[in-house]
Image 1 (cartoon, rainbow, N blue to C red):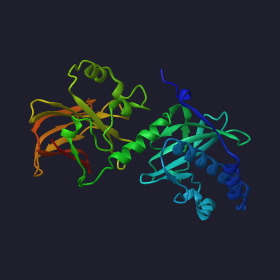
Image 2: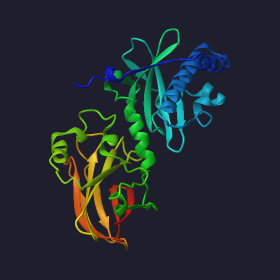
Image 3: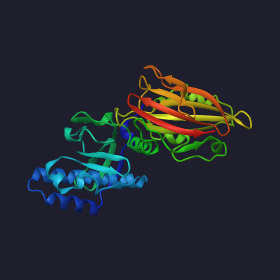
Image 4: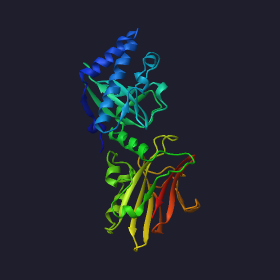
Length: 321
């Protein structure tokens, strides 16, 4: 059984970080605000260190938590992730089982992280991640592993949702057969990293379907799609499986799997469009579906598009066979 404590990550708080936090706190006129600013600053710096170690670029200067005016009037601990959005970094004390999240930071965040600070502020423990918060008190045992934040960031960077828009990039499936892949199209093992056991990726049906496929000539890649900009933490994966039928014809299977729930969102649609934009294949998820898929074939040089849509959110991926 999964235990969130198994994913806790301890990091030192270096002297430089304490000096920065104290300098911010020293500018405050009231003790309670000074303590709040110091703790918020340390939580942000700890998360900055972690994300930088993971190869994720951040910008302190673009964060509200680094603005002296905002520090006085708002309880914010945001960290700007370049090209993606802001993550909130909340702190709590050793031994506390819940963390306070002020209502003023319940929006405009790609996620929330929780950092436990030790009594002398010399070490910190990153406890976990939550994609969305709409309550003032968050229980630590409800958190997801911090690795989920990295998966969410990868999803946002790989396939930013568009509203009635199209992606200009074209994935060349003939190149895939030569093991040449465009950015964002990952091996399934990479997409699986950091997910909790209860997620649909790990259900028996999915694992069995992969294990039973004996065609060694198949090529499979997946891309994370984050629909959470307009929905709560809705992360899915588009998986493309191709195999060569003949020298000029390729078999193509498209599938959508949930990444943050057991089932797909009801009414989510997967569609295939021809080179002039007409839909010729489409499937819609029901509330009980843990995946949906479409099967087609194409000749070398043919163009088609794949659309994933849910309410007003629409993502388009373009392909050439």
